[in-house]
Amino acid sequence: MLYPTVLLGALSTSIVVGVTAAILSWREIPRPGARWLSLLLFGQVWWSMSTFFRVRSSVIEVKEFWLQIGWIGVVIIPLAWILFAFEYSGRDWYVKSRTIGALSIIPLLTIVIVATTPFHDLLTVTPVGYGPSGILRVEFAGVWYWVIASYTYLLGAAGLLLLTDLIASQAFMFQKQGVALFVGLVFPWATNVLTVTGILDLGIDPTPLAFAPSGVVYLLAIRRFRLLRANPAPTRRARQMVFDEVQEGAIIVDTDDNVIDLNKQAEQILDISRCDAIGSFASTIIPTYDTLSKADSFEDYLSIETGQGERHFEVEIRSITATSDRPIGRLVTINEVTDLLRQQQRLEVLHRVLRHNIRTETNLILGHAENVEGEAADSIQAAARTIGTLGEKGREAIDLFSRARSETELRNLHQMLEWTITKIEANHPEVTIQYEYDGPPVAVDALLDVVFRNVVENAAAHNEGPDRQVWIEAAADEQRATIRIADDGPGIREHEVSVLSQRTETSLEHGSGIGLWIIKWGTDLVDGDVEFAEREPGGTAVTIEVPVIPDEK
Picture 1: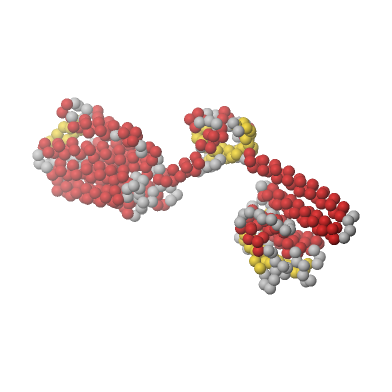
Picture 2: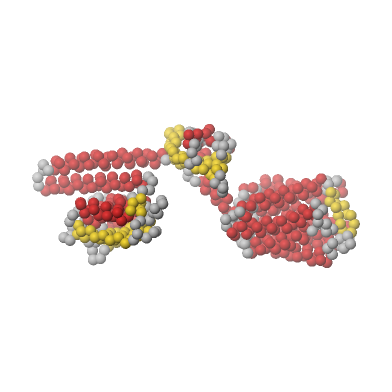
């Protein structure tokens, strides 16, 4: 049995610790959870203070008064706890006036029932005498006593479940916060359960005494674990925002192909509301779903008739697995590609025009020009060759983007450069190309063959000096490869290089301008970098840095 002096000292400790923690929490308002944690700590302090004055008084009527006053703190604690758990775990949409009002019904009724105990038997408090230490012993009975006890335990357990994500979080800081909140609740909760069940009989409800270690834990969490300051509340909302606002439609189905969620974009694409879609079979809202869903992962195109006509969508189905790699559902993404397919069709038509029509017409012009004499013939032939070069570069650009949509193809860097040099030397025998390679054999994206060919072609074709030189130096390690191609020609016009950073094309005097864009586009497509610089004493130096692709890829 606890003696009054010791008991009063322990209660005083609970009050001081609780007030300190409440003040620190109050200072963090309006951070998520701060006001509700402050209210919870206020409830603990209120309960402790009413118990303190009840023990300290020697008049039975005063003791009964403070016993009734203590119920205010008793009913505040579970309400504040569940609201804190909602807000701190990122489920703040539950912290609305309607929810708070519904959860407050039992606490408010409890206060009314306690205030009117002489007129009913819903909640009775019966003094059963004094213990040897002089503490008044009471017994609680009545239906409502078990209602408020069940309410308290239910909300306590629900709050813990809401915060289990913290304990299971991969962020160590949130793990520590979750454990602290768990321990802070378990101390008074377990003490109260042991008292209610009769296992722990100290002559008085010792729950307020457990608020002392509970408050210390909350203080530790606020000061050391940055509780309230660094909180996970935005995470859930951010994930929901990404899911709802992403440009592609997203539908989640379970293992039985029932729709369990979808985002706003999917509602618009499928012309169905979220309420009507959830619970439906996926095959009833996604055309040809039965065909698409036969494999765990699948990608195909889907045509849907809408108010704007027929629209085309790329559909991808991916398996959702648990941590044990056990399938638990599927994610269906629908991305509109109508404009992309139309653009691709236009490029294919343009490709055929560049490949066949321009080449044919250019050959006809050159053929007719042979029948013309004088300077006019030279001008016609030069213009025809320029047109042919532009057509060839256009075909290369279209081929480049077509290949970029395909699966990555690997090439040996050293062999690719040697092949490029052999081809350019055959077309430009008057140019001397010196080549050095330093490093182990490495693989790079095959798209770079177009890039290298255009760089070396520019260096060779536009050099009109008597001793035409091109220098190629390549070095590679396990991560990156650097290729430097320099020449002693006239250099590249400054406006043709500067336009590459402006993302727009300007009028060109020859096909080399398109060649520079091909170099830029090809390097970007493989996540590389290209730099154009003047070479001393004359010419151009082009440096290309690209990632090396491991053999297993």
